[in-house]
Length: 288
Image 1 (cartoon, rainbow, N blue to C red):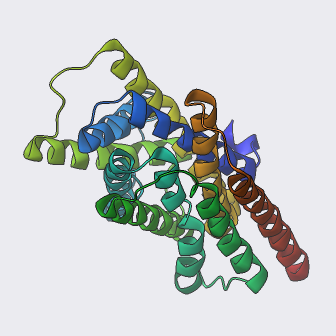
Image 2 (cartoon, helix red, strand yellow):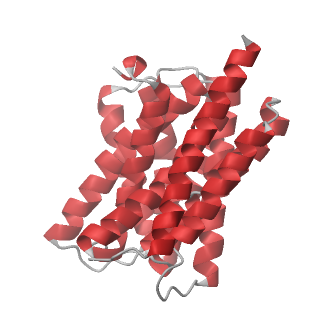
């Protein structure tokens, strides 16, 4: 079913879903970021393995462990730390820096030299996100900001390596194994440092189910499909949709009214996505 989906649309849907997770972290889930990351990864990966349980070849296990650590373990740990310490939109903003990091990493690892137009559009998009979320009294926590940057760097590197190596088994199986590996790492860490909630209410359980099944199983499968079919640099700009969705949910659920400056930032973000996609089509036509 994924093979019939446009890869860029697939990546855009994944980014939009990821943007919804911040509202759950800030309003519903308990304040245990490592435990939350473990639940998200294991709750997203184990259901997939019930239906798609093909093992990767033995020679691939080192790569699978590395990808699982980068795409799930490190990303989830630092992403939820950032979400705990920063407003959801700010945490999403830091994650949206992934396109710039991806373009730079893809240059030495994939040999894909970015055009100035594409690189400029991504930089403009990141600037637009910053403008979008600078209104109001936002105090940036240093630890949270660093955690958000680490999460963006880890996911960018994992996406580029996935694009370089490909996969030895079908997409859903490959996604599931990465999630389970990252989840086991996070579960062990949560148990070691005691980052476990004393109790869970019905709302928290429902939120965990959404974050694990929709925000992880489905979203990661969609994202990896986009990376595999279109390439990491081509889908990386859709990272910018993450804070856009987080911002929209803040407006609808929390009643946040955007200022004129923030509206300008939103327009810059959308414009950068259009420019970036136009640059990609232009490069493809030139190559053809």
